[in-house]
Image 1 (spheres, rainbow, N blue to C red):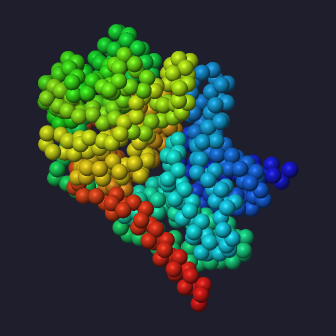
Image 2 (tube, helix red, strand yellow):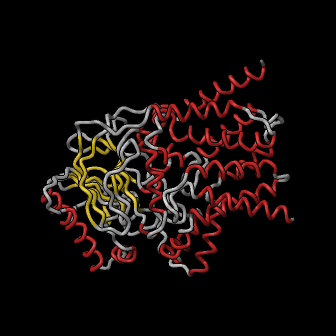
Image 3 (cartoon, rainbow, N blue to C red):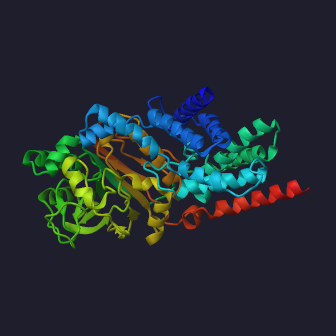
Length: 510
């Protein structure tokens, strides 16, 4: 029992160290910790004698990850659900069960994988690929990949447009598995270290570059820094709150500083009233801004599902990105991936009763597909909302649905998380999409962090957490040409895996 408790305690510490690879309350994250925490965790999983022991170690690891990396969850639950502190802490701890659910699938893999020499080089290669695929395709509450901390090496990540973040996960799993295996066998197996050295060298020799384009889009990002309670009050019909929010956005949007924006962007659910598709008669605030600036507008707002009653706001309103042009609604994108327990609930007919108890929880309608978002000048873009941009597979589908995209615009609202590490973590993970698709990302948030992310991982000037203001940027446009990764996804990685497996088989045969 003592040895089990010690093992679980050390595994919890490993989870905390893994969390420090990402932005946290201690700073921007430290990549080398990844190659300490992960090998230890995988070693404890591999030597766990029973399924129960394996499950306990996964729980311990996720607990450490939760306490260090997701310490902001109880704060969010209090802010979002107006729950008592003790209840928020208990619920926050329960999130350890769902933060990285793909590890629970690993238990099934370990139990039912066929008889094989899994400590062999071939066995470890196969395990690394299996882990990468499980991580890749199993839904996560806050999508991140074990290869994500490599972002700290940007712009020296030249393989990203060809293989995506998924190749960094594969290399990380492979190195981690080989590390504890070689220590256990007391035998050096050079193949993985040679491959790692070549991998790092190739990424460094062909660094990512910012877009060199004569075509730019003058964009104004508006960050109004609206507090949650003011926002909720306006959405519930409080006239003073509604007018205060509109006035703030109007004044910021109309700022006269010599910059002439072609597109003004407001963040997720910025406008408190409801739109009704292209039949919407725009409020005077929009007509005034477009007349004053001569700009089109892209705003985060609520769009009514016209197939349902406008008097029923439960699962009949979309969280939307709405393009306004020539004093009318040009097109709208409806959020496809809703956040569980924030924007949707999994309890079917009981959802309405739960919302009556915890009214801060919204029940949005789920969008499907995406319309073409295109400005008068022909600039085309997609508009993922909030955590949608963290789902690499989803973003591939979004970009491939129409093609010829020149930029990505991401609406989000991180105000529920306060001045914690979450806005920094969210931004950190968002950057991977700019690298994978070689497109600039215009990130518009309510309370920060708003900025433009460039395809080499660098940023424009920021509007930081808790800041009210505007960010005027001439955004260099992408060519519209899809990257190898955007076109083929994980298939190039599978090809590399097969080559490595063939080389390993040939070497062992000799």
